Structures are given as structure tokens and as C-alpha cells.
Length: 116
Image (tube, rainbow, N blue to C red; front, side, top):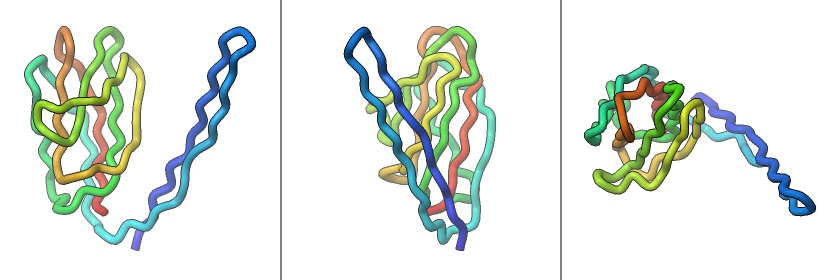
């Protein structure tokens, strides 16, 4: 059995208004296969191949582009998440799919998919 650790912090300051949040945890992983890749994502929604991963657990997605944002989600035509240039996001997938689309021009996107 493997283990995935996710840790982070969010700090917001705007004048006298501020918020600080710590988040994370350690999660068991029973599946073995994983997929790590960099894909060139175009301006038409792309269904990312899961490789040998049959039951998706965690996904970490990174927008490697310097100019354009991407949108992504786990249901086709429902990309409710957005990453601006240089941003990344780990999340537990709701199903066995990942759909990604670049906004203005093709973007290189780093993707790590871990079995559940």
C-alpha cells in the first residue's frame, strides 16, 4: 500500500482584511499504476488518457504555460476549474476522467494521475 501526502497553505491580505488557512493530509493509496506526463493541450477540449490507471484517486495538474490559462474538470464540457499561467492544483478525482482545454493558444500542462 502506498501513501499520498498533500499539504499547502493559503494566505490572503488586503488592507485590514486577512485570512490564513492550512490544509492537507495523508491518504492511503492501494492501487499501483500511476501516470506522469506533459501534454500539449489545444483550444478544443481534450480527454486525457489515464494510461494504466484503472481507478483514479488523486490528480495533480500544472499549467506550464507562461501566458495562457487552462480550464479542466472530470466531466466533459464541465470544466469548472481554472489555472492561470504557472499555477498548479492537486485534487481527488470524482471519476475516471480528466478533460482539459487551453484558452487562447496551446499550453504545455504537467499531469500526474495516481491510482486510488
